[in-house]
Image (cartoon, rainbow, N blue to C red; front, side):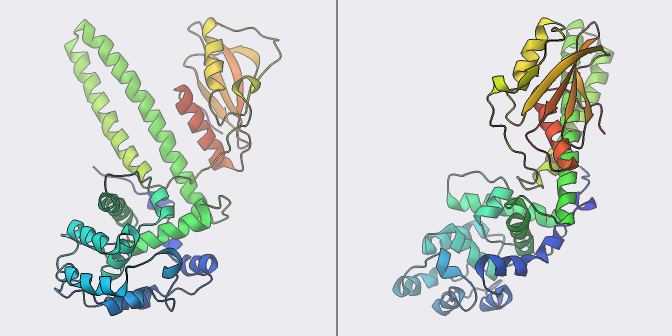
Length: 372
């Protein structure tokens, strides 16, 4: 399946250029990873074991802040266990599961095990860390080794998608992206803004295709009951085409870290979000249920209805303002419509406005057919 890459509008490699500045700002230290990689030079592809001297240098404050975050076993324990690493790095990454499990048994910490593998083989490994785990949507697994393997699989997808020669560089770029842009939530970086815009575009396309897919499924069930063979065949072909497009869009969504677009949740209870001056009446019994469901969306802050019009079906989002205001046309089968304004608590820019519209579309299962 051919996938359009996110690099059309965003370059994750640019985040790698921020790594030294980010590291210095966060830890008040210079960046020494090149020297640390040199500690393990010559281990990969050989039967040589690690030495205690290597671990001593790895944990030294001369290079980085290891001792502020992790511990290693005592000298005697490490000295005894280093023999377990003989031949461990000979066939990386093919025997990576065994290598991870052995290193975890020695250090009793999956992050330390990942640190060792990252500096032994920076081409195929990265350091597992909370910010990047959050970015990659990583869920808990049965064992720490399985969590790290899952982490590596996703990290390698990013590496391929954005053209990194080394998985370690993709890992560092994602860490810089999280620390500089996603976690603070107020980045002025143009590259990050392009990333936000692309993420919203893909989500909009995914929601649109999902609604089409649902309509096709419903129609297929209806036609199948009538046993109209030719129409069933055509509908199945169209449905399968949309399913493939949805699979492609799901893949695209996975290569965006979570938290790129953030909206505040409304502090108001659902019943206080609704504003109506009662100049107009409900156009049908379903409108009240529609509005009650709409105000349950935690990102909706106000729902304003004071005007009824005529409009053709379907019920839809007909307009999206840069300010975040979304216009919904709730339309009956007789083409009577309630014109409803929906607002977030705040909206800093157009990307956030489009994202709010997507959330509303998804929550209400209605399409976005108009946009400013």
